[in-house]
Image 1 (cartoon, one colour):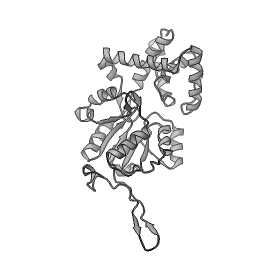
Image 2 (cartoon, rainbow, N blue to C red):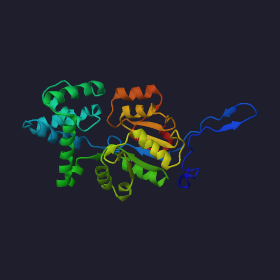
Image 3 (spheres, rainbow, N blue to C red):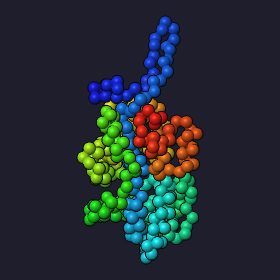
Image 4 (cartoon, rainbow, N blue to C red):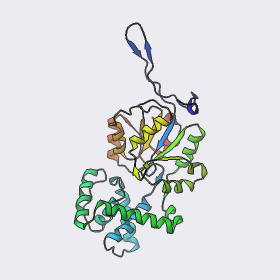
Length: 300
């Protein structure tokens, strides 16, 4: 561990200490981590609720690909609410216009935790409309870019940070922990949103994109291990994410990342069934906002 994090008060990093005797090696039980060295945080669904922006972007992209009908204010609000309730289905932005299309046309949408069925539906809906994944992605990106360029204040105002999360990250900084944002959202958007809460947050490290491509989150964690001279299994990193699939992929990563403490943010884009699955699996900690706001000692 490098000098920046060598203070024993900064973390009781989980390690197995081997005592060599005349015969076999004895293993000392793991020491419980008091707090992380690195606090890796997803952005959407952990720090920021972007569902109002997702819907508006999805609607505008939908209007570019289909003939969008005129909606009454009440019908549009109901559509936005239904769209938001199904947010756990969606992993990538190109899926958003397809969700609007399905809801507007009375096409049955799978339950919020049945992502496999939804992915099959997206392929069918896109094929029926003669649209490729790449075309949908381009339309969503262009809508967001155009909106942000023309009306940055309006775009920012369509996001809501979850209660208490900004203050909790600031306390982590003051406590000697290193918060890092690990996200597939473009850095310029994340940094603009963080800047609305002050310079301290605006300068946080952000990972997830490199040379115009997404870096898988297990790859981001490995880079954090190297950057902070941590154990190869990631002990010292606590990773808070709202997508159960992502945490399960970390669980299956090879070489193993078993030292990373994985936490599912129950306030984010997940369902009760997914939270039960996480608890039943035993490898992922489910955390609510009240515990997130409290001491690290209560997180695990």
